[in-house]
Amino acid sequence: MTDIELILDAIKWPRRNMQFSSKESIEAKMGFALPADYVFFLSNYAGHESFLKENYFVLWDEAELLSLNEGYEVQHYLANTLAIGSNGGGEMIALQHCEDHRFQIILIPFGSMREKEIVIGDSFTDFLKRMNDGRKWFD
Image 1 (cartoon, one colour):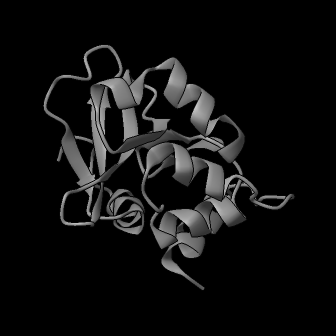
Image 2 (cartoon, one colour):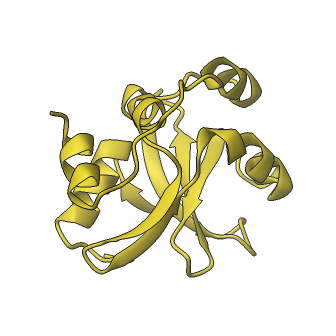
């Protein structure tokens, strides 16, 4: 089992009951390939909200990713960034494609996306592992 499966299955995150079909359209819109660990999540898990330790969070389903990103105008404010969810407290969780072709997971306010983002993971897997280890949003 992967780290993602161990963490999400432990909190009973719902598994996807249909095929992940929008990878190519998301990547075309974003202009970069999604990282493998996030593709694994989208391929195997549905959008949902839950607590992991004391942190509440929402991860959006593939069907709503592009429309929510367009609605929040994420790419207008944050180049190379795909919003993937929320912490339920006014901040967006986003996947950011860095210049050196690596990815990081960031937390940034929905209302003022021009602020400095907080890195909450060096990858999607790292983000989940940090939360599973009990780290708070702003640690």
